[in-house]
Amino acid sequence: MNFSRRLKWRAAALAALVFAADRASKAMVEAWLDLNQPWPVLGEHLHFTHARNRGIVWGIMNNADNPLSGWPIAVFSGLVLAALVVYFVTVPATKRLLHVSLALVIGGAAGNLWDRVVRGFVTDFIEADLGFMRWPTFNVADLAISVGVGLMALDILFGDDPEPVPPAQRAGAGSGP
Image 1: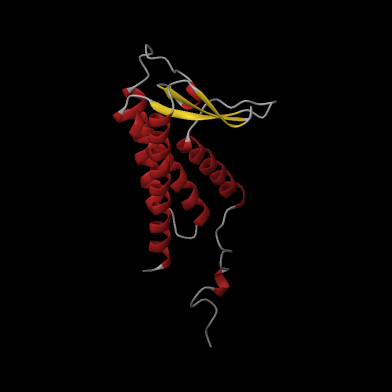
Image 2: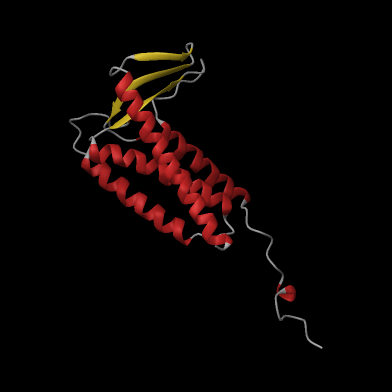
């Protein structure tokens, strides 16, 4: 198997691993924690609290009466996920960091989309509070998406393409008698 195919398969496996970790963590939270019951992990700084998010990221539009919650969000999420998969397939093998970042985003988006389609809401459970900053409740999928987007930003800023080959050094150029 050539490098390009091996890289794509490894990145696809990473996306599947993120999806599986997200599903497993949500299943454990749903089985072990009552809804809205916090469980301290690291004192006041980290809690696991079983929450249901019918809205979008960070609980925005988290209202069952909101006509945009539920299926409209799921359809939009599915379209974005499909576009990301198409983009993933077309990314050249030289873009290793972009493959990893897309795999994280795709795996996380698939995990949250599964919840939206199957359950009608996304299970969130991680609450982090640093004292000066408190994050809204999130999950493993959200974490993977956030890290993936951060890696995409690094790829945009610094890239990981090999140095371009000057025209004079390309095969056949300047190698005459």
